[in-house]
Image (tube, rainbow, N blue to C red; front, side, top):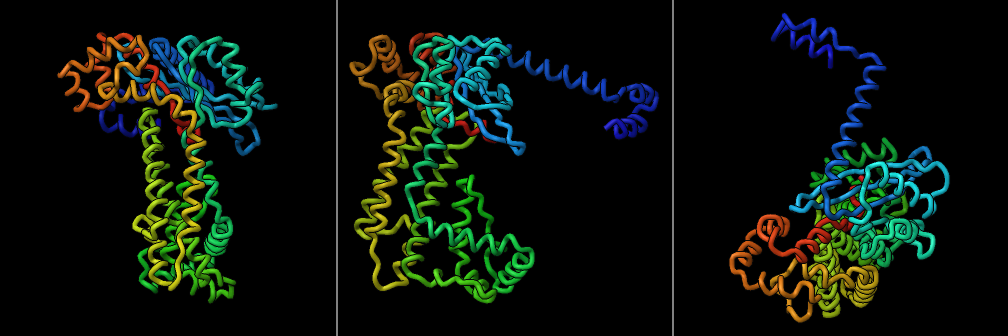
Length: 427
């Protein structure tokens, strides 16, 4: 960079070339400047956190390539005037055990380091590991005992729970065959080059088959769909290599493969909606509720033999003479049950979500007394009702509600500060 700067100065302002030459790049100087930048960032973050009237934390613990456990902590806070701060707080290396007590000690150190007022904590989101949420010795239990803060909403990452729900699908043999075939093609350089040339000779719409990554749900959906679209070409290529690919001519296996491809596509669409920064938790819960309603529709349609939302499976119905959907109705029922069980905790907080996200639709008698008079005034205000329709929730509370409805504002700050997932901890 210094060399480039010297060339630039020489052409633009030669008389100041000596100033650039005097810039020291010794390792001690660079280390000192890096420390200065770090201190500045830390001070800036401390200042922003101190201005928050409510905040939540999200934690994720995983092991790096050197087998060292790394604890990542993000913080999301809201100021009195509804300015939102969502930042990486810090990362702690844990070289010994990773029990709930160890994690509690590390998080307590971070709270002290950044001078965070624990009384403002309203939410904790974790990856749901036993060391995090264990009833007696988990991090959450120990940490709340330490800070003595009440009414903290503890949640398991919504994206993790969606992935856990998908485990009930089964069809392990289908996935095993697909992954084995993909790995045979992609992991051998000669096979991979020959396969791409083969697809090119067929004028295929796709230049290659996708790699599979077990820890990425979107990878599963992409691999299955691409494999489905290329199954005829893959069958021909694998046969030419003398590989056993007989399952690609087995009707029962192909039916399962088609169903798995379709339902995985629906799950991956949900996964995408749940990802991203600055997601308000009520929107994530709405996405889950919407998907649960879709599952009810899928079950009803499949039981009647309608495959309108399962295009791959529908193509199989055209190809074979006898086709029975009952097996897949049962799978949808298991998936529905898993979603209902996994997201039971969020349903317990449905009243809080409705109060925050849909204040104009509430029946006043059904909400806590401290909100009743404010909600009556809010619902009677025509200008606020129009502002609610025309703006996103954050703008609505920041620009129209702020300063007029104390209890409702405090509740909104709590809901806005909540993390729905540990998505950013894992990036």
